[in-house]
Image 1 (cartoon, rainbow, N blue to C red):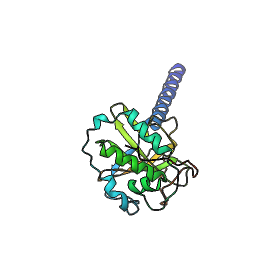
Image 2 (cartoon, helix red, strand yellow):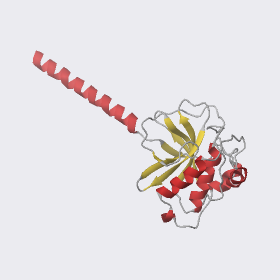
Image 3 (cartoon, rainbow, N blue to C red):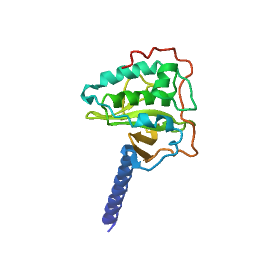
Image 4 (cartoon, rainbow, N blue to C red):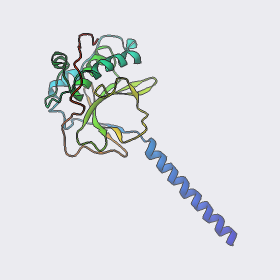
Length: 212
């Protein structure tokens, strides 16, 4: 009787430990869910760049490789940072040679769409879950996996397999005419609505003439 009770207890602890492990693994590896929506809180802010989001290129995307995207990112990374309350168009960024995160990400989005890339999303989220301001970057789906494109902070594309789930937490996504609210298993929510900006104010000037 005692032996049976102990065996049952060990069996129960084993199952509890297994369930805990499964729950932890699910939390760690669960990916954000992109839920299609009719509108987002940022739509009014983004009216000026809506035509850019809808860009449809005629080029073949086969010519867009990771090294090419890294070249674009490196050039955009060198653009001096300047926060703009109003969303800048790619043309305005090219003329002023200044941009914040949303301006740089939108310019890279336009370049990629014009080159025929369709599996790229414009993201508004938190670079760090604890940040006050939201941030803007791109996510690019490829046959080799998903890449994070953040020309505000990075010179190269980074795989989405992050060490910390507290970094680059998406809140809303835009892909052509489609809009998504992103549900994060362990991430923050955007309450209340904040300005989209992040970065450093003292980066050097850079010539955009060769950004093609």
